[in-house]
Length: 511
Image 1 (cartoon, rainbow, N blue to C red):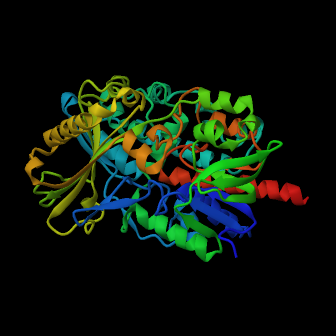
Image 2: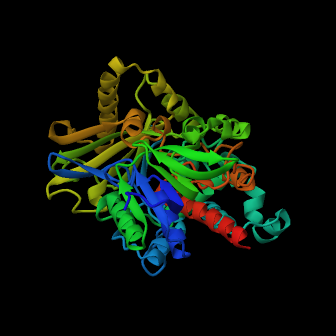
Image 3: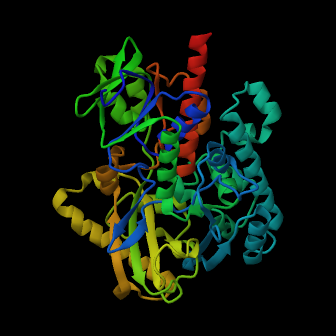
């Protein structure tokens, strides 16, 4: 018997969350003949952790959205439950603390739309009604996006059933928030999450902002076993359902004939036949390097990838520090801090490497997962999510000095908030940049957040262009670069969407 079968219904390139979600969705609908090929020695892609000096450290996950408590699941949490993937979810204690010394803002916000509005009102009296109505609008748009992503409608139907979604779809976050006539102080408190989509508020579609805010303020979760718990349990369930899951098997080529996928070739030379391919690799790489022959790539596919701009990439300092969080001056799970909340100024600052980052997010994992490190230690990460362009100019001989400088500057910014200089207590430290991500995960140019959601290219437009963006029959994409965008929860949604497209095509072929 050979290592591979002669033919599979579906080959999935990459055993990350999107690909495994696609596999689980297909299996749930009766498609069992699935091969998952992962080039690394562990599943999960960026949903992983690592060990340094005997400490297990979370690599990426800050918060997982769309989960919900056990008896009131949201869509991603319900998906895991329906698929039999039992994750040990732990609620995050608050949404965020926002610290802006120049604006005299130091406010802690919790989940719950009404509670959050009350907390902003306490810091900026007279804002409650407007903030609460803004959040209710965000929730209505959120619900519409979740519905429309699985139930396409005509423009007339959308206007009738989802009027707020339609009315706000063509406007930026800034434009819609401005209609509420909130004081600048309140707007600054409502802005911090922009960092996770990497587009200044003036060019961030309100649809994206609304989805983000409604999701985060519904409550977030982390995994007791770090994000790698998700990966391992999804892999186990895929295999239990009958999928063949192979590690250390890199796909080099996607084989195409007459505009239709017919198989893949691994780096070691195995040619594997299939009817469908789900790719976790970015379209940029697929359409320029992986399609064989390249003459099968339509010009429209190249035009599409050239017209899309990569979203942000992480610069992160991940540490284990001797002493409890309290001893290190850390009182909150999630803290956004900086010199300004003007996202245009932050974006300009992020777009160069000549000055310290003026806005960071800090996560203390202990405060959601108390046993993430041995008692008496603190697990802390400091992150800036920045454009990849400045890093493209860095020469190899400059790189390590740059990493050390960035880490030092980010730690110094964090200490200004904590009030405790913990540098001498750092036990383990790792610094990641877009180069780190590109090297270890293979993400295109180190991008973990897919394509930027801007006013001229966002989820609404992508949904409308979904059919036109299918350039090769049988080829589907699942990952951060999918229609729903970035983050671990959207990757699950993107994987399910890829499975849905395959299932619909299978149904057409049988008809």
